[in-house]
Image 1 (cartoon, rainbow, N blue to C red):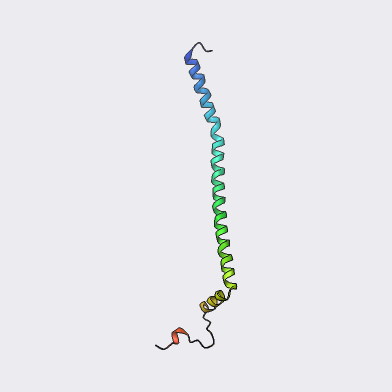
Image 2 (cartoon, helix red, strand yellow):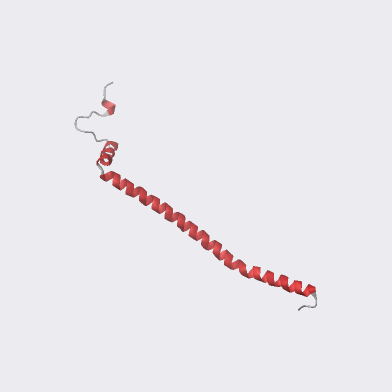
Length: 89
């Protein structure tokens, strides 16, 4: 095909170099898109975790045990109960 092997090697090197240069942009775009997708996935996981925690809290507040716990945190006592700081040893 080519009578001069140096010319064939030069054309081969130019073709490979051109291919590498032309393929760099799509890989940069892919890397950027992958980073954006990973960030969105992380935000979605955090949002789902936060939502699950809120649902757990809401369910806990609607149960009898949860309401009693919340009342005690706020300082409410039952009718015949004495506050702990006024209790006698």
